[in-house]
Every structure is written in structure tokens, then in C-alpha cells.
Length: 197
Length: 197
DNA sequence: GGTACCATCCATACTGGTTGGTATGTGCTA
DNA sequence: TAGCACATACCAACCAGTATGGATGGTACC
Image 1 (cartoon, rainbow over the protein chains, first blue to last red):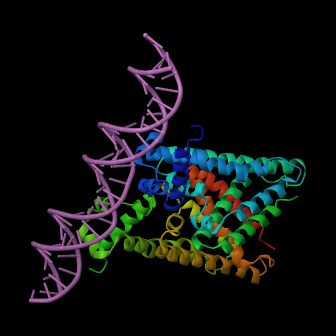
Image 2: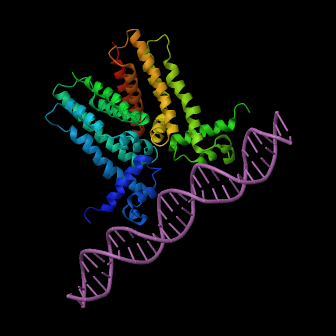
Image 3: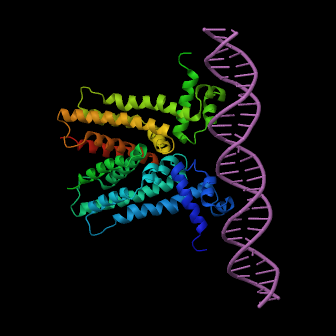
């Protein structure tokens, strides 16, 4: 089979279960129950629960990161800061209530697993690096065309921006409130405006 | 006994175990092993694992929040923004490598449990409210004495500040790097400077 | 062209270990 | 002698993981 439907179904269900419960508390039985797949099939495609978790990061969350945060930031006709702000707004708009309640899947896994398992940490760290570079590149582009201040360090600023974005997601998740997300996101956008020069 | 040594030992060990593994994956057996206390004693003081988790929040993390973030911000001789910046710096300095690796205990529990259990969410949310009010009060004090811009909403700004602080902790935790914490913290301090007016 | 063979894709049943929780007993103290 | 502060032993449920077997579809060979 070219599409591996069973494997994809497992990945999707595993993503959902991990998103809800976290990796450690994610139950394989629940994943099997939700997919109708049996344990034999699961262990045919993944050699362990950890391997399934890695695959969720590599094959589900990573593409999502690329699609919603990296691709929209690539050089285009619009000015870099506008692209960055637009990307943030769009990402917020595309979250449904469930996403707000459950938080950022990447951040969830990073926070839960990075102190415990190096395989998870390597993967989440690599994804954050990609994200950071993408934002730093955008900021540098703005410096080159004169639309962004030159007295900021693009990499450090990118780090701060990602931290604030994840922080906003966390605040909104705890408050279980889109309003909190919007208020906090407004803070990020205002901060970005302060980078013009 | 006036101090309830056993109970305190359980709280401390439970805090450590939860800090390392998260609440759901925290093992009562591990807590018992680390304290030398038996299961009978544990269930004499706490009616369930969840009750133990609540007690850790109420009696261990809450006092820590008050001591490191609320008390130092109270009105004093120094200007409000300086107090805020100093409190942040001090909090960062007082973290050891282990704290950086394991992250903010309040944020960890909030992120893990708020979508799953309303008792946890109520507690973490209440603590964030206290934290937010404390920072908002400080900002308002700065507005009153003219040292902070009047065109900012103190509550929204406080929300943004807390989000960035937790975001920085998260970034540092995932990177397992104090350097990342410092870089990110520098971003927060620079942002605070932009509030002067 | 038939067939023997073999890898892929699963299904079922089971295991040892761990989990949170409980029932019951015991010593000590007020 | 009543009750607080434990200790021990036990429980059912659940966990990730495994062993084994069967169906199916393609391929090599006579």
C-alpha cells in the first residue's frame, strides 16, 4: 500500500491522545480503541511507545510547524514585519477552542519530555531551532531593507518572540480563554511594532 | 505533633517527584521510597493522590510564589520598574541548574493539568491571578508617579509579562541552557525599559 | 500456467510489572 | 480507653510489550 492508511490512522490518533494526556499518560489502549486498530498492527509499525511518540513529532507536528509558521514567513512581496505579524494573527485565528484548551503540541511535548528523554529533547529542540532561524531571517531581511531597527540582535529577538508566543499559548491554556490569548497576542504584536526603525 | 514532620516530608518529596515527572506520572511508590514513609501514613494525611497534588500547590508552590514574586514587589523606596526588574533578575539568579532543567513548577502543573482537572486549574489560575495583580499594581504605581507610560493597559501588560517569563522558562528548559534563559530574560528586561515614559 | 514459497500486515491471547487505593492491625499517647 | 499515627498485606485495574498464528498478495521456479 502506498499510503499506509493504518499507520497514518495510528499517527493521528496518537497525536490526539498525546495532545490531550501528554506522552507519558497517553494510553496505547485508548489509541487502539479510537482507531479500531489492534495491538499487533501497532507494534508492526512502531517498535515501542517511544518510537510512536518520536514519529508523531517527526511526521505530524513537524510538518504542521513548517506549514503554519515557516512557509508563510518566506520572502515575498509584503514587508517582513507585516508577514511576521500576519503569520501570528493567522495562527491564532486558526486555533479552535480545543486547541486553546490543549495548548501548543510542540510546547507540550517539549515541556513534558525534554528533561526526561533526550530523544524527545533533540527533536523539539531542532524544531525550535528551525522556527527561530525562520524568524531571525525575517528580522534580518527587515534590517536590510531598513524597516527594522539595527540595534537589535535578530537571533536573541527571535528567541524572545518565540518565548512570548509559547507563553501566550500557555496563559490561554491555563485560563481556558481565547480572550486571554488575544490580549496576550496583542502584547506580542505591539512589541513587534516597537522593532520598526 | 505541632510540625507534622511526616506530612511535611511527604509534601516535599511529592513536590520533587511532581517537578521531575509531572503529576500524572508521579509515582506514589517513589515518594514513599524517598521519604521512608509507608503507604498507611500517606493515606492517613491525604485521602488520594489528587489531594496530595492539591496540597503541594496550596502549601508548597503557593508560598514559594508569594516569597519570590509577590513580596519583593510590594511598595518600597525604590521605583516600581526597578523593583520589577530586580525581582526578575533575582528570581533568575536563584535558579540552579536543576530548576532550569525542570522548569517552573507552577507552569508545569498548569500546562499538564489545567485541561484535565478543574481542581488543579482553579488553583493554578488563582495563583496566576495573584501574580498578575501584583505586577499590574506595580505598573500602576509607576504610572501614578509618572515613571511608566500612561498609554499602556496595566493588566494586559502584566499578562504579557507573565507570559514572557513563563515562555523564557520553557525555552530554557527545552534548551537545557542557562544561557538561553539569560538571553530571553534580557529580552524581558529590555521590554520593561520600553515602558518608561 | 500452476504452485510453492515468503514477506508483509495484521489479530488474539497472554505476561510481568506497576499503579492508586483499601482493609486491617498495632503501638503509643493523652 | 479512645483515638491518632502509622505499618503491612493485599487488591483489581491498567500498563507496555511479546509470542504466536493466520490471512493475503506478490514472486520465483518448474
